[in-house]
Image: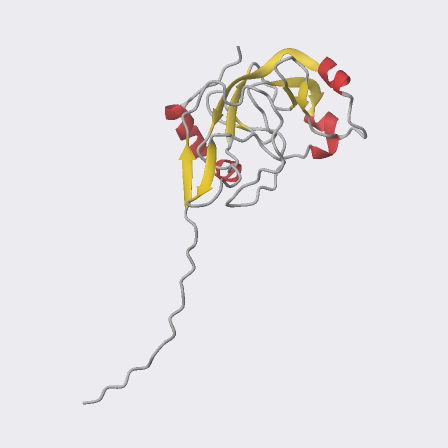
Length: 197
């Protein structure tokens, strides 16, 4: 008996690259340089509407058989030497000079950190382990028509007002802001602190 078969053209399936997260061990030096965040590094999975945040160099996404992709921004939780949540954060270099600071137009109502449990705060401005705080409040600074000079900003630093501990979270800033309960749960059991010298 003759059987007739329809012949279908075979098409090659495109091989989509797989994403693999490579997590190197954390060291106490991570985040201690106070260097300004690189604005060219953006999320490989979702856009982030907030200004650039501190990113962990060792947490990168690689394409199998390809080249390293941009680092996925990690959410940051931190503690301060006092309640400076409404004060302008400034990032310093190891020599005490300014590493980075925002323009007044960069400050929005969403720039203030979110409160967490046990003195922790969820960063939304890009703090590092070398962040100090200015006597300018975020509201005062946002209202300025011109950006103060580095010298004026350094003079505005509150003595002893600084980040004392910092924790890089295994989630993006968007995920952390959407679920602060998950952030609190992580901090209770996985706290890895970088303290100021």
